[in-house]
Image 1 (tube, rainbow, N blue to C red):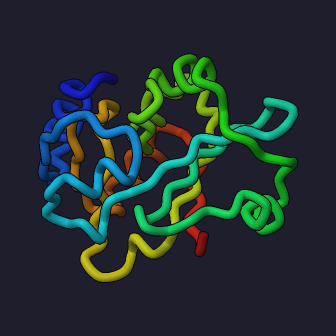
Image 2 (image 1 turned 90 degrees about the horizontal axis):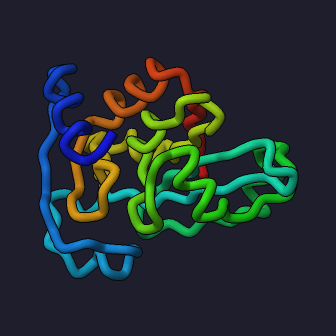
Length: 162
């Protein structure tokens, strides 16, 4: 799914969302320069794999949070983790660097990526801001709608304190 296909899909499902168009951003520092309607709900996404390239994980936390991959490994009993390659990102999620997003899981045809979402998104407004498979916009959704879409697609979802 490209950006427009994501928007069409959200409309088809009748899912509440807002869209913030912006220049392409490739990291959280660049995104911090964009005026966002829900700055406390923007997501940071890490696409990682284990050392055998057998298991892939998408870890999503709030933008200001740091992820300790060693701690994540202990907490979730995984093998040693490192960032997935640009080729893995393209082959599995059909994304390019800078556009990693939970919505990319809708492109995971083999449902091989396990999605880990920080439970802090369920606090307060319960809104999450993610790229629509393109880093020139942020789409704001209810976090429960995002989780439901990914589970419906067939990817495993774990919500925990990350």
